[in-house]
Image 1: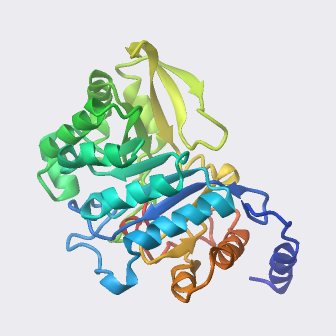
Image 2: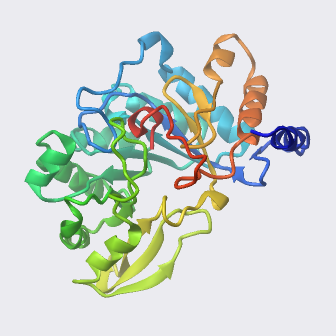
Length: 352
């Protein structure tokens, strides 16, 4: 960074307005909290984790049940967070997940609570999770071809995932969203995946692959773009542009002509993280499983709030540290630019 750039960043830091919200120096306000609960996962998706899994986090370094609940609660009360999503790794690997959700619900009765899961084993726990206070779930599923699923995830668990999706729908969660990362080997099956989603009554979203794989094999040239996904879907379906749910929502939506879910026009979404990024409207703040604030998915800057909590600090002091971490958030990820550097952590270690 040049001297003038450093001075500019310092000036922005000094000019932080007196607000309790998580505002950054570009005027964005973070209201959506993503909390990674573990680095462990029951799958090994090639774009997310190495085949042997991620290095284990020592138990003493990982947030406990009570620490997660306290940090989410103060984010809601003190910082203006209005939605929380629990991620991993795979959050179902936490045996205390129901207690985390129940504790969050007790502290924050009006806070929407969501979870992103791979769906493996979800059928066995969805009842307890909903009873604890879970409102919504996103399930990761890239293909409904069993052989392709096994190759991509390095595990033959597609039947379990499909049962998990159906269990979430049967439990009354609405909407149930399915996240798919299109790959060269699976792009041909995109219309089949949409056909399955329409039949199951779930909302499908395609997300461009990001340079967050643990094996460092991501290539901009090989990445399947949002437009390629739309072109593939259009070979079977008529798609009508439908905009976004709200300005900060990352998914661009298309109605699927002639198809309806519960009387409403069925939609499919694409999240063009790389080719049409939404950094200017980003409203997210992240907590890693070790209790560090990560202001941007692609920034290696992390601020330890768990250490502040464990030192005996009150919520007000923890909140101030969190505000400072978000004030320094970068303008955007800059993928494709000469200054872009891949994050040291992979997606599985950061949390989605």
